[in-house]
Image (cartoon, helix red, strand yellow):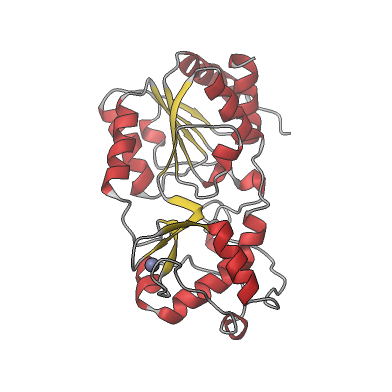
Amino acid sequence: MTLAPPAVGSSLDALADLVADGDVVVLSGAGLSTDSGIPDYRGATGSLRRHTPMTYQTFTRDPRGRHRYWARSFVGWRQMREARPNDGHRAVGRLQAAGLLGGLITQNVDGLHQAGGATDVFELHGGLDRTVCLGCGDVAGRAALDERLRAANPHFGPRVEEINPDGDAELPDEVLDGFVMVGCLGCGEDLLKPDVVFFGETVPRDRVDACFSLVEQAGTLLVLGSSLTVMSGYRFVLHAAKLGIPVAIVNVGPTRGDGKADVRVDAPLGEVLPALAARLAG
Ligand SMILES: [Zn+2]
C-alpha cells in the first residue's frame, strides 16, 4: 500500500460526507474489476494491447469474424467465469446493505457487482452470462452454451496468455478457424451474440432511460473506476452536473469528468472503498 498524500486523505473525508448523506447512485467501470484479474483495456496500459475489441459491424456482417470471436470467447470464458469479486466490489455491497446506495449502473459485463453482494444493478453494456440470438431474439444462459461448445470442441483449448474485458482471448487465426460453433436453440441459426453492447453498437434506449431516471433520483453520483472516455457513461455525469447533483469520482489517473466533479479521489479503489465501507457501514 502506498502512503496517501494529504490531498487523498482530505478528499476521502469529503467523499465520506457525501456518501453518508445516502441515495448514492454508483456508475462503475473497468477499473473496479482490474483487481479481479480482468484487464482494463482503456486504462494506463490499454494502448499497448495487441487485440482490438470486436465491433458490432464486424460481428454482424462478417461470419468469419464472428466465428473467430466465439472461438476466442470459448477459451476466455473459462477464465472469466473463475473471476471473483474483489474488496472494492464487496465494499460497494456493504455500503448498499447499509442503506447508503440506491441503484448501480455498471459499464462492466462481468457480473462481479452482483457476485459481490450488490442488488439493483443496471448493466449498461449487458452481461457476458447470457447470449441473445440476432435471428429470433432468444435469450439464453452462457453456461448452457458453454456445455454445448465443450461437447462440440472436446480438443479445442490452447493455452491463453490473457483475456480482454469482453471475454475473448488471443489465439492464432489457424487455430480459431478449427473451432466448431453451435447454433441457436430457438431457431437453429448461427446468429448467437453475447448479450453485451459491442463497440459501434448503441445501448438500448429503454436501458439508457432507466439509468437516466436513476441518476435523477440520486443524492450523489459516485463514479468508480472509469476514465469516462466513452459517452455512454460520461453522459450520466453531464446529466447529474446539469441537475446540480454532486458528482464524486474515485479513479486512478485523470478522467474526462474531473472538471464536473465535486469530489475527486485519485487512489486505488481496493483501498478507498474498503476504507469508506469501514467508516460508514461498520
Ligand atoms: Zn435464434
